[in-house]
Image (cartoon, rainbow, N blue to C red; front, side, top):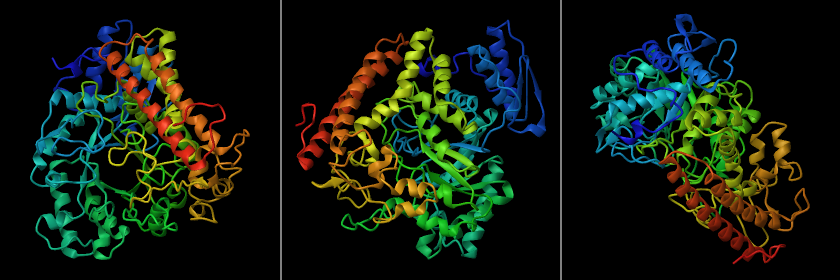
Amino acid sequence: MDAWKTRKTWLNMFSRLPGEAARTPEETARAELNCFLESHPEESCTLSVREDMGEDYILTDTGVTGGSAGILYGAYRWMACRALRVPLPSGKQSPACALRMLNAWDNMDGTIERGYAGRSLWFEGGRFSYDPARIRQLGRMLASVGINVLCLNNVNVREPAQGLISETLDELASFAALLRPFAVRLMVAVDFAQPVREGLDTADPLSPEVQRFWAEKAKKVWEAIPDLAGFLVKADSEHRPGPHTYGRDHADGANMLARAVAPYGGVILWRAFVYNCLQDWRDQKTDRPKAAYALYQPMDGRFCENVILQVKNGPYDFQVREPLSPLFYGMEHTRLALEVQLAQEYTGHQIDLYYMAPMWEELRAEMPAGSVAAVAAVTNLGRDDNWTGHPFAAANLFAYGRFAWDPASDAEAVAREWAALSYALDESQRETLVSLLMSSRAIYEQYTANLGLDWMIEPGHHYGPNPYGYEFSPWGTYNRADRFGVGVDRTSRGTDYVGQYPAPWRELYEDPEKCPEKLLLFFHRLSYGHLMADGRTLIQRLYDDHFEGARRAEELSQKLNTLDLPEPDRKEALERAALQVKNAREWRDVLNTFFFRFSGVPDAHGRTIY
């Protein structure tokens, strides 16, 4: 038997996976509940479906009432609460957003762009290739935390993925059928130049023949998959084709596609990740974080109702520390999706421990009310037996589902729930695991990217330190370190990136005395002698953080070693912790040496800097 079929996940309260007999979410809910009640004979529960409730549900001690999908979400929540012996949530439970999506960056050759948990779960050799039982288990995992859409292919659409909505549409429909009993709908990333691929001489969104092409394409696709959620599009970004090729803007491109899918209830997720990736490093006026706002804000109010602009949480690219993208403040008349990255591209490759839920708590505190219509996350899943490479990286997927459903979720409570559902640890060890998760983000930030310094990382694969790696590149990713200081001046005296924010954020970021320290060098260029709030100089703070982060990484590894985890999770977690310690030491020594050689200032505590 495959190892993934016997490993524990947070679903270990169930003894078996519902078979193919379950064809609807209600049937799945009944099968799952029956399975649970067989192993918990002291419990009783009835299910009542109310079609008017949709994804909503209500829980009582002995029953679940919910809509066609809500009955399944409610059944999973009821069973989790009963397994944990915690109180049921009171009142009607409703998701904050109707669309709660995973973006898979899987290629049809089986590779995954920024994948750190093995090869694709559903593609290999240029075609669909999967174990149906494992895909049903995937659907079960997603539904158990309320994730309802999976975009299964890379936003950078590469051959033969364009054929998903043409030559291999029947296979796409068969895959969709496996997830349907779990209330998970498919989305497909499409190539804006698809009409050219299929014989037209243009993909101009204002061309009548292009409009007919997409209308006919949508009709065929939705006939095959009536519950398809929509199309995801990356256009005019990092050499992807888009409307700019034809002198059109992004509202023209997105709206053309939106009109094609509208008759079927489809949406267009249009990624706002557009910037000049061929920047001259000598140009100190162009500032990459300003790009998305400058492009899209003037189009606010022009997008069709079924267009959702998908905006990364920060203005750069999933860096360890960024401010909230100003688009969330400046697009009041456009539907927006918050995009986060579960795949740890810049946060440790699912080698270094990095629990993301504390970041989402911070985003919640800064996000304007009502600004988010959908949420999307770049998935951290792969073909590894444990699904996520590092066994603890599963906590991020679990937490994402919780926060997507309810942004008011508590990061520590979610970590505790995941730990209790995943491992049979005693209370003391469970609290140790929770403390490791809760401290992991701060530790990683200390030894890699303290004070808002981004991109000091190895180019290409993005693991390990290289402070000059992107400094003279065309990607617009600079720290501007020299013998006088470090950081980019993004105030009104510099690039005026702060001008894209409304009050009070603009005033907060403008003043180095008020700017949050964790973002200080993101917004300001400062001398090494700049005094921090605690009286330390900037250079000493840089040294101290890197030394402290590396020390805490070693302590994390030691504490992890005390946990009575089951195998192979224990072995895998400890192996990755050892790699994290090595990585943290490398970051400490490379960056401290980098800044020492520029500043000439020794460490006040006499620690070794090379």
